[in-house]
Length: 325
Length: 248
Ligand SMILES: Nc1ncnc2c1ncn2[C@@H]1O[C@H](COP(=O)(O)OP(=O)(O)OP(=O)(O)O)[C@@H](O)[C@H]1O
Ligand SMILES: [Mg+2]
Image (cartoon, rainbow over all chains, first blue to last red; front, top):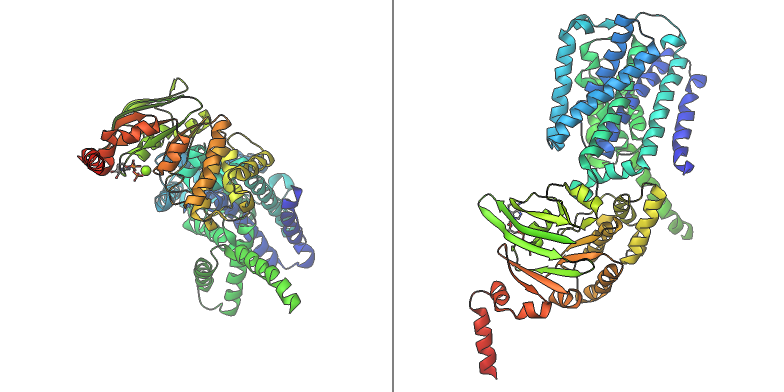
């Protein structure tokens, strides 16, 4: 049983060691940002990858986490840790609400994707308009370094914090995948009618999935806030984050526990490389994203991890024959 | 154990099932036969809770379950197979069956152990690690059966689990169904393969154009002129009798 957690331990250990090998601020910034995306993508992956309910509006959860945390700190002077916990809870609650409305109405596939997008857009427009969010000016978190304030002088410390959240998310997802709930969620993805015939309460399973999914992505929103100390509606509820988390999960290997983390590193690694080689052209990294996505969809539906596993098993299968030759 | 009373099902203008009733006593294997398009599968989906009937009621173990959703009926002990098989195509055989087993076993180890046990029972023991999508027609039918069985049902609804199988595969699976009944599971089966109906069923209901036209012991039902006409067309029974008379 513990064996299934070994890959998580290995990859988390590897990332934890990065600050010892690399000290450049740019590199550490890169890793922190990727970890935040990876955490958000883990949320997407649970609902979209494992459960087969493709959301195009995870910004709704990311933004709610970030805004709730920011508002509680800026307007009510609440402790950052408690504010973050509240942000995660509210993100989960919003997810449950959106899930209740859309799943109960029987929305699936592209209809579900469009409705989630619509919810996120409505929240974006609201956040831009109401005073409590600071409107178009946004919200600035006061720079006040201290563990209690979830602000760190060293980038390495924040990296470890983000990594801790990612690791917790990975363990949670692994545990879910090995549980009854995980099996039922996969069954719902594969065939809802067959799942119902076997006693699976499809609506309840989807609601549970979107709630946990919302919590994970909201946590990413809270981390984003603590790292950049600034929010506005286009950051918090913008389509960019919905796309980021979806892409990371798809590229890494949807439905696989480590998929989002691998995908986030692959995407942003490639994006940054392209920027370095063709930095002059604005938006070139986005073009790279698009290319990667097309390649994945066309040639590696299981994502990078799926591709690696396939190559590995093929090599393992080819080895005995090669030995004889 | 199961009481279906005056079920009517309309799809727009089409009346697929019209005032159909049947009952299944505990411990029996009851057959439901009838020509193509008679409404047999429709009646099954109503019993299993996948569609709400336009009229009529379904009672199970003395309890009215007409308004209950499918997953609750599964918990109460009704399991169905699908005429058009519905495997979880991306999962292997063990995982497919385990989804059923999780209904009564919360822990993964227990659910998987149960799944393996059921797989062996229906002859899928060697295929446990195969992707469901790679199974043959016969294998997929067995998988339907195994998944339903893994929910540990009181009543098993089998919708043409023998269709598409060759005679030797049918011979293999008939004792499996018998053994399931001997373990105390009540069975209601839709079947076109008459050899199996004759072998397995103690009682048969005949549905034609949505109406129950006959019921009784399999041998008697097959000789019923109304049943012969439903299958072969109006006047067929008379022609057959005349033919037999002139042969003599
Ligand atoms: N969801 C539906 N919407 C409209 N018509 C339907 C629906 N389901 C079934 N029907 C129609 O109801 C009638 C009965 O279909 P059903 O599948 O119950 O027959 P059956 O007895 O199982 O036939 P077969 O032996 O071919 O499986 C058919 O005319 C079918 O086209
Ligand atoms: Mg049918």
